Amino acid sequence: MKNVLVIGGNGFIGTNLCDLLVRVGYEVSSFDLVRPGKENPKVHYLQGDFFDDETLEKITEGMDVVIHSLSTVNPGNSNEMYMRGYSKDFLQTVKLCEILIRKHIKMIFLSSGGTVYGNQDIQPIREDVRPQPINHYGNIKLCIENTIRTFNTQLHTKMIIARISNPYGPGQDYHKGVGFIDAVLKKAMAGEDIEIWGDGTTRRDYIYIQDACRMIASLIDYRGQEDVFNISLNRGTSQKEILDIVAALGLDFKVRYLAGRSVDAKKIILDNTKIRGIYQEKLVELETGIRLYHEYLEREMAKENS
Image 1 (cartoon, helix red, strand yellow):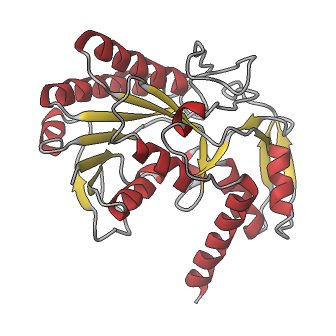
Image 2 (image 1 turned 135 degrees about the horizontal axis):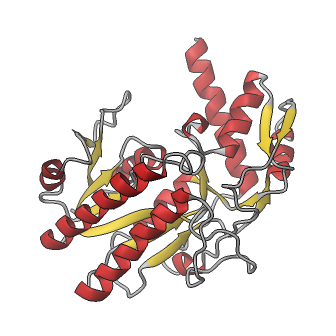
């Protein structure tokens, strides 16, 4: 049984990933600054500061695989907090790479397919195009990616980069800076206005969180030569189309359109051909995923009101 450590295990992706990995039989440890409010009894929870070198040495001991999903900035705030991203997230991840290489531990780095590519003419976007990030969040991720590829080339390591598109589903919180579907559903259910930055034609590749986690998990035992994988549904959907899907669920809402943001690329659709060569299970279609998430939110609301 492999020992897997998820750094940033309390986050949206990290929490769902830990839950999935224990279900399929891995020994899983979750590391974050604080313990979660709701714990999975099968997950080992480790608490500490990612930016403390001694802590990184300690938590990685005895691990077979480390999945790095921690970030202290997001696409929306990175243009103001970019120095934090470069001076802390980037540099500490380089230290983590050094530790894992020395200990012969495999790493899967969760990058951002929604931001590293920037504006691309050819869609869906393949992993071999030249990334052109338009915000600092994407550039910080790309800096880490380039460091990983340099280690892989110079030291023949096999660290893997997973470029995730736009995941959505249980556990997401749009207040943390990402999650359009999450925001639309929760605001519509609460009777609040939905805000859209731009004219609503921005297209993204939305993937249900369980599918994203299963794709990532399929890379744990991957032994091939590739080191970059898109994690996506391979389908682009505009914000207005998301509104139509949500309206079809019977939800009523109002929309306010605001000025577009310079941090947002106009269109991002990720080619998932490479990962589908490894993970071949049927993916949840967007309409089904939004319905499932809406039903989940209704159940959670009923629990709170009971």
